[in-house]
Image 1 (cartoon, rainbow, N blue to C red):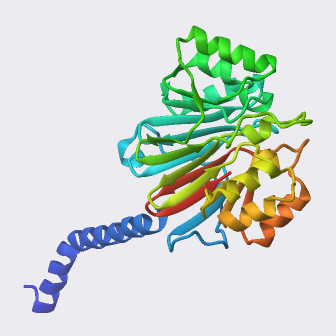
Image 2: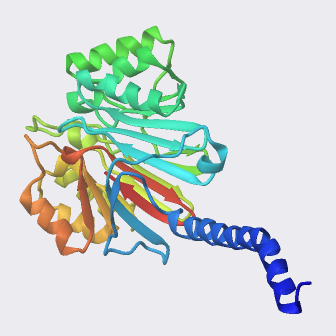
Length: 330
């Protein structure tokens, strides 16, 4: 006959599998909760660098370098509250892709061989159509790849400055636009449009009249674009130089922003300090190359205002804007 103590021991042994099962379930729940809490902001393959510069609001800002797994533009849960801006590494040239929800805009297309890079970016993101293509001005490092883009994907709307370009790149682009049956819009007045839930404001120069005794006039004809999304502002300046910067500032059109594309690939001019003072960006992007890097004076100005600076000579720069703040990846 078993004693009470031996009976209790046998009962405890019989219940041991159930006890172990409960303990394992409890540990599994703890592991799952810890992973969810700590992994939502991680980006596989990227070295996390937290910017020391705040945005215009109290929202978070992250700057990272490395391989980034971006959300698919066709994924509604990711795209509904996200503006994604990609500054492509195409040398000393501009090629910028903006995506918001199911809408896409391209600002400039780099040089002649860079059009395929823009198309590859769009293809990798699952984009089937460009809703707006805007060429800021007709220098070859902005319009050069535009004919390849128009020939390679459907383009709904084309915005252009209201003057005639002089290079073969401009001619090739205009012929491609004609073959595609697109009626381009020459911007002579401010243009307001939307890209998904982003608001876009395009400003032409006060005049397209070519100044006397000036050989390089294209840069100051650049269209200036301001994008607003969920309380955040991004400004794209083309290649505007001293005269146009001062005209823009005097007209009172400049406003503070979160992200500023530094004009003319970071080439220094005396009006840049006034531009940075008026816009007060937390973040800047320069489209430059290792062969033709931004001027040290320009980089010094940016540093002096406490803004961070990303240069495309080191790789594509991607800006992600959401209700949670701004993330910049390279």
